[in-house]
Each structure stands twice: as structure tokens, then as C-alpha cells.
Amino acid sequence: MSTFMAKADDLQRKWYIIDAEGKPLGRVAAQVAKIVRGKHKPEFTPHVDCGDHVIVVNAEKVILTGRKLDQKMFRRHSLYPGGLKEMSYRHLLETRPERAVMTAVKGMLPHNSLGRKALKKVRVYKGTQHNHNAQQPQPWTQEI
Image 1 (cartoon, helix red, strand yellow):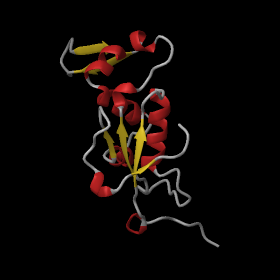
Image 2 (image 1 turned 30 degrees about the horizontal axis):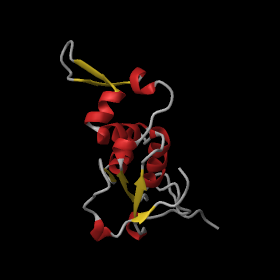
Image 3 (image 1 turned 60 degrees about the vertical axis):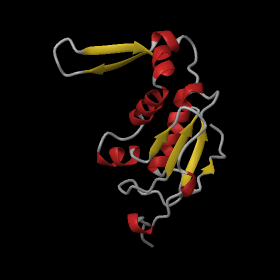
Image 4 (image 1 turned 90 degrees about the horizontal axis):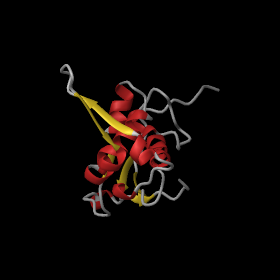
């Protein structure tokens, strides 16, 4: 008996909604990374993009435990000398909460072409409104 290897054309992709309200940022990001990678499916194949699409709503209501809101810094660099910009996660969640969630998910995906392809299947929204009703997304029922 040979090992089953999924083919990208044979997979059925679903859409899921995850409500991030009151949930820790890392737990939400880990769950999203697992879904877009396809690890929740029995036909998971490591070298094939077999994940589903994920819509994260209420990104501004995600929580950080401890003193991470003030101590954890979001850093980016302009690639010019002295071009390091940094801000606390408290300021980042007030101004651009979508970016905080996307950065956390990106760090939990593989850093190769498969991870870049999986990251394109993540949509993050500030409130509860999204424009993907035509895809008939289902709420993610497993515990986060």
C-alpha cells in the first residue's frame, strides 16, 4: 500500500471565519496558520498547498497577556541607514490591528514559497463586517 499524496487540483477549499474578540493574539495566529497550511485535514501533504481560506474579524479586540502591550515592540526597517521604526503593540493595535494579526500569522508559517502562498489566503478585518459573503464562510467551531 502506498502513501497518499494530495494533488492541488483535487482539493476542496473551504472558507472559515474566526472571531478574535477576547482571544490571545498568539493562539489566534497559531490556529489561522494551521488552517491555511491545511494541517487540520486528514489529507495533509507537506509539499502541497492544501489549506483553506480564513477570515479573521474583530482584530482590534485581540488581547495580549502580561505587559506585552507596552513591552513588545513592532519593528520595521526602510533598508536605509538608521531607518529602523518601532512602536509598541498598544499603539499598533490602536492604529493598525490588521497588521498585528498578519505579522503574527506570517511568523508561524514556513518561510518559503509555500508560506507566501498560504498567507494570501488570510483576510483580516477590524470589525465584524467583511465582503466575503458570496464564498459562504463557516464559523470555525474548534476551541482557540
